[in-house]
Image (cartoon, rainbow, N blue to C red):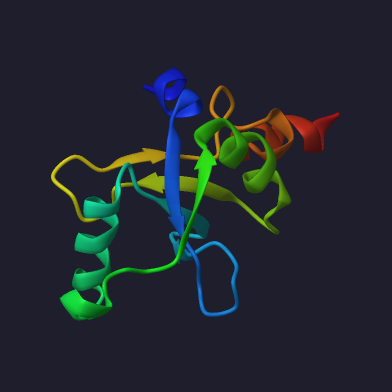
Length: 114
């Protein structure tokens, strides 16, 4: 699944300041991404947006760019939440093998001991 996500273009909604829409949960900043406009619109409606307003602005980004560039640029632990609120959501947490080692939370203890 990680390989497929890395190759796929996904839609990332923009927040009010023009940045990528994200939410914090459990000490991790989750960047929300969607596989298509219908999934994004369903999420927008679930957030209290009317169906007429559900056409949120978004950027199309390759999954690899989110994991390799955006996640490491976030201050603190970050991952990607794909199709939140859908029947088949997927999380890409900040762990080795998904994000670069320097952004992975499972490498923190090892780095502290070196």
